[in-house]
Amino acid sequence: MGILYSEPICQAAYDDDLHQVVRLVKTDARNLNVQDELFGDTPIIAACRRGNVQTVTYLLQQNADVSIRNKKQRTCLHYAARRTFSFLDYLMIVILMPILLIGYLIMVEKTKRNANLMKLILNSNVEINAVDCKGNTALHYACQRKSDHLVSLLLDKNADISITNADNETPLDIARRLKFKNIVTILKKSD
Image 1 (cartoon, one colour):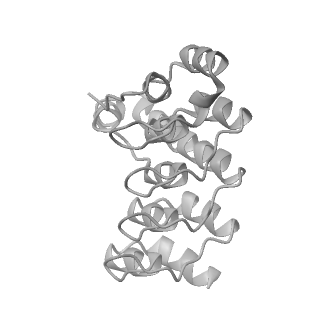
Image 2 (spheres, one colour; image 1 turned 30 degrees about the horizontal axis):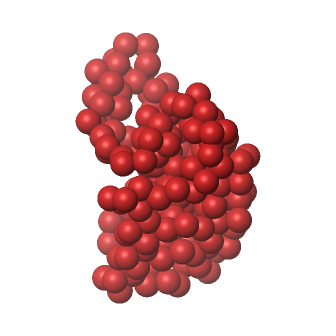
Image 3 (cartoon, rainbow, N blue to C red; image 1 turned 60 degrees about the vertical axis):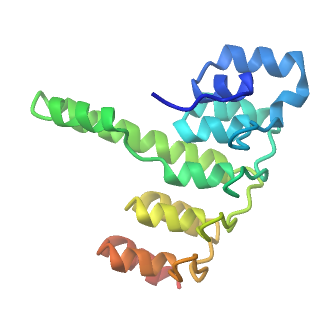
């Protein structure tokens, strides 16, 4: 189950169908930054929603516009920061954990993949402190996801820790509320 897009290239990017994405961009270059009617997602946003690193890499090489926002005012950076394990990922991890630590290896691989996605996006000209409809930046979402590695990557690019969201919370407030001590320490050091 997932999202159904009205734009074929957004669907291909979401489904990680790189061959279809390449074909659609070559057919019409305007497809690169086309926005879906329902969500306002571009192909790069759709690919970031699913963590499709190869597709994101290709779209960035084609100069996809990382500053375009969807109807929730989110950029691809917001979705890279929001990446988390799916229910299926957790299920595989739990089932396979006792068997030669395969579950642990799956978890490590997924975490590295999310970090690589974030690095790709951060190496573009993305607006690091873009605020969505809830007032959240990518740093807010990385804190909510308890991702100290993503928090560090965002701070290395000078993400602003003082931005408050619609709930009047900074990323540090979120980390304190959720009792993520490691992230609290990282954020305090950057202040």
